[in-house]
Each structure stands twice: as structure tokens, then as C-alpha cells.
Image (cartoon, rainbow over all chains, first blue to last red; front, side, top):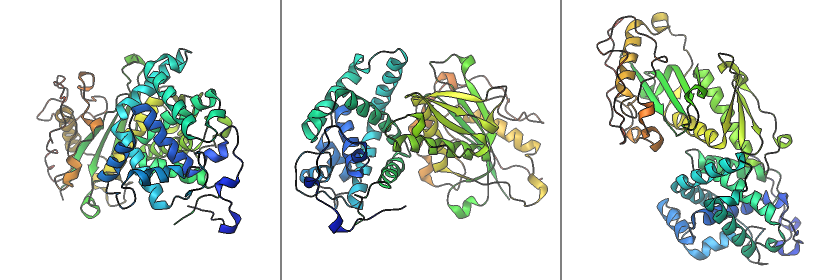
Length: 203
Length: 247
């Protein structure tokens, strides 16, 4: 496991970086962005909110790291994709781990729904039909779209096509995160992405 | 020395993984089942497919481990990459010739390598089938360790007749409920049956007859029982097969 730590002086705050009009894959590769997006996908698909996430955290004894709404918001707000300059943009390993555990716990809880959504997606894709044509998927894509545009800096400028593709990719990812090896898979996926991204900082 | 021969079945909706193995005495030191002489049968039996299209593969411990590694590597690669474009997916190290690669966005081709048989060398999997396969393999891996043949002595090079007979009994009795306990000494936590293994429907109620080696001596129970009634509830533990007579 390799982490590349940039000296503090070499890093600018996120507020100094120009944001791209379209979500840059390099930014998406960021651990913080990815964790926020996985939770976003769950919110959009299942309709859960911070209450469910905090409950999951409590069930797994993660209260020392994640116990209240404000903390949760702060951790998710560390994503470079989010609106809002300034504020804490760091996420340490324990916090990342907490978000991983919460995400997979929720995915597992709702795996039937995730499965149904993926089955519909497979079906419609095979029939060469638009995913929106299934109510479950249509609602998911709308909700994802709305949440993304509302929260992300480049939200309004990101094309619906890109958002749809992103939402569907995340839906499929959720299927794998809802299985028995889910936590390990999400963790590894984050670390693999971070290999090329110098923003990861170990606590 | 006592040893147990047991069967475990993993039944996510679109495939069935059955593992039969002998439990090594080493389990006592490891604290969870350590298995030897492992054989497995994997059926891709999604209800949406015709039975004749169901692919069944069989193999030993090495095959199972290679399959698991290939599936895990592939799933991990899918999760790490933003898009499923073939060009971005790195080549897989294919142990035993078993590997996967994407076919479009939602389908995947499993190359069977050493598991190929009857002129079937690849299997096309949907994303759900891939996920179920990964789930079944993960479940097994989380519950037991399998060891290669240890050059210990010749008394159990191949399962003798009594062991095969016992295996047939175990299969005949065992698949009426979802799972069979690996051993008496196993961790009580192993008795918590994952939901996948509890899903038995009438379609899967008949035992894997071709999978079980046919017994040389007639066992007390018939090796070809009528399909038992499906159990919808989680498994009641079934006792492992009785201790074999000494060789």
C-alpha cells in the first residue's frame, strides 16, 4: 500500500484551484469524492438521509469518529467536488474507514433494492431501451441528478449524460459493495484510485 | 483419528456452488474448518435461463482458488476504473487459464481455462451473475480454508469406498436443508447461515447426483432419494456424517 504525501507547502487549498466545468476524472479519483458519491448514490436510490447513516455508524460503534450530523456533513464536504470554499478539506484514515463501513452497511441493508435496480438496468439495456423507462431507475437518476447539481460545484455545468453514466456506474458498484466482501472491495478501490492522486493524507 | 466429510452449498439466485471436502485435523489449531480433498461444483442456473443453457463446472481446490482470485481481481478492477472500456482494463494474470473480461458495459466473459469441458470454454455472465458468483466464492472463503495435498502417507490418497458412501448419505440428507455444519468442534458463529445459503427452492431440492462419487458399497440410505420438500427457513444443523470405520 503506497501513499504519496505532499509536503504541506506544496498543496494549495481547494479554493485556489479553478474548478472544471465538467467533472474531471482525476478529481473523481479522489477518495473523498468517491466516498461522498457512494453515499449520494445510496441517498438517491433508497431515499435515506443522514439519520440512517448515523444509525449505521452507531450500530458499528463508530461514534468516536462519526456521531452527529455536523460531523457527517463535514466529512462529506471534504470532497473536492462539493460547493463551498474554505472549511476543512481533509479526511483522515479513521474517518474514511467510518464512511466505508457505513456505506457498505447501508448497501447491504438495501441489497434487494440495489439488485432489483441492476436487474432492470440489464433488462432495459439488452432491449436497447433507456434506463429512465423503468420507474425505479428513472426515479434514481432524477434524484441523483438533483442531488448532484444541488451540492456539487460543477453540478449545473455537468451534462445529464455524464451524470447518468456516473449514477449507473455507482449503482453497479453498490451491488458489489452490498456483498460479503463489500467493505474490502470499497477500501481497495479507494486506495487504487489514490495511488495516482497526491491528495491522500495519512493521519 | 476422526475426520468428517461434509458438504456446503451456497445458493445466490443465479448460481449454485457446492463444495464437498474432508475436514483436516488441523482445524483444531486454526479455529475454523481446514479442508482437504476438496471438490466443487458450480452451476450457473439463473431461473431466467433454460435448463439446457445452464453451465456446470467442476474442479478441485486449485481450480476453486484460481476462480476466486480471477473473479476478485476482475471485480476489483471494475470498481477501480471509471469506465468499462476494454482498453482501460489491464490484462489479468490468469492462473489455470481462468480469467474474465468485459463485454460491453453490463456483461462479462469468463474464460474457463482448466475448468473447460464438453467444448464449453467460456461462460457469458451478466453483472448480477458476476456479483452472485463473487458472493458465493466469498462466502465459502470466509468460512473455511482449503489446503493442498499434504504428503503424509498413503492411507487416504483417494477417498475409500466408505468415505464415498458417507458422502452420498451426506448429500442425500444434507441438501434437504440449507447447510451442514462442518464439524462438531466448529465455532458456533458458523451456524449463522448467510441468507444466500438459506435460499433453497424446489428447483434446487434434488441433490447433485452426478457430483457425488457413486458409492462402491450400498449405503444405509439410498443414494438417489426422491427430491425432498424444500425448506424455506434457515438451516437446522444436520449432523455431520458418522465417523468412518478405521481403515
